[in-house]
Length: 170
Image (cartoon, rainbow, N blue to C red):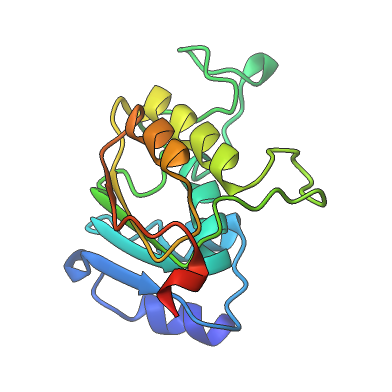
């Protein structure tokens, strides 16, 4: 991770508008995403694969810095401290999710969100409350039901490839 951070910090921050992150062996948490990529203000498009997508989407609903608030609320009443000033990748226009299992209902999930789909809806709600708008999402080669897609379409623009099961892509 240290070598990767050094490499990323040596790149031209203002010139990178698209980021593709995937593959085995990448185990970043939400804070890692924020720590590494927050300086990249020109990022508009992000493609993430599998489990990496889960932590990336988690970072979308978190403030980029620790903000002190009375009763853990900001001036607009946002309970997690996320505001337009401290939102992660505020110029983000498109998030492409690949090989994500939206249907997984992980009983070991510490936050009790009931799987990625429910977590994503929560993160989108928080982000929209802070930013006023959301990036569009492309859903490719994922396990997701048409009903889940419709729920997400009520929140933001969704481009879906109609694949409902990861096995359909093999």
